[in-house]
Amino acid sequence: MDMIPQLMEGSSAYGGVTNLSIITNNSSSVTGAAAAEATQPPSSSSSPSANSSRYENQKRRDWNTFGQYLRNHRPPLSLSRCSGAHVLEFLRYLDQFGKTKVHTNVCHFYGHPNPPAPCPCPLRQAWGSLDALIGRLRAAFEENGGKPETNPFGARAVRLYLREVRDMQSKARGVSYEKKKRKRPLPQSSASSSSAVASHQQFQMLSGTSSTTQLKFEK
Image (cartoon, rainbow, N blue to C red; front, side, top):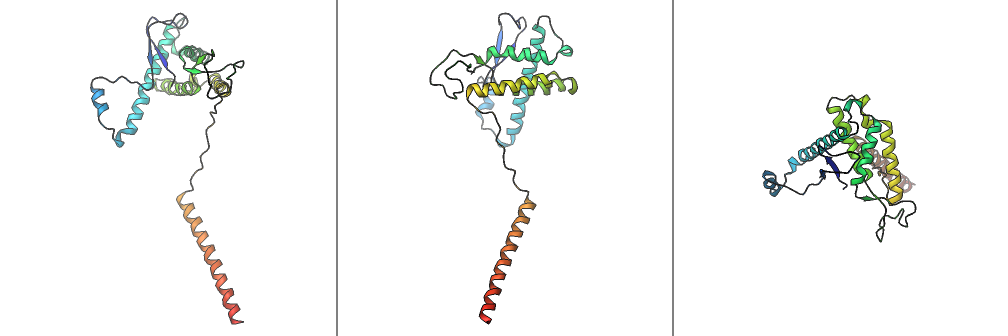
């Protein structure tokens, strides 16, 4: 899982990176009461709420990170002036913290899903991490009073950029991001009616066979 940085006050969006606190989706440090809770076996009833809580916490951290990025921007930007172009700048800025190897066209391992040796190709943010990040920021923007029609995270330029990153990384890494279509189960009523029709047809076939046999015996 690639890491999304949390900018601190005084760091620069374009200069040297200082005072960075790295946030990971799967934190390994648990202290205080959280440590006591971690020792208790999780209950099945609290699982959905726990997942929702992790999502909300990550969304809040992402929103704070983007806010710091805007304040550290040169010149500083207000949220009301933020556009899709600024969101693209933010995504490209995050690439320096990526952990995903993306092979270039001239690399011998281009399109190889499991390279047998290291190479000097750059590290980037994985498409899945960026796509999930934009989804959380898009929701946070509207939760904080933004209008859907002015949401910079839903801009067409952002969607096209994510699609371009997905296609490029898919080819460079030799992996597929296409979702497999699942077969939808038949509704209970349809399944019951289909079973009833099949049983009725089988009964008719058996009835017809017995009648034919009886006629033959009569002859």
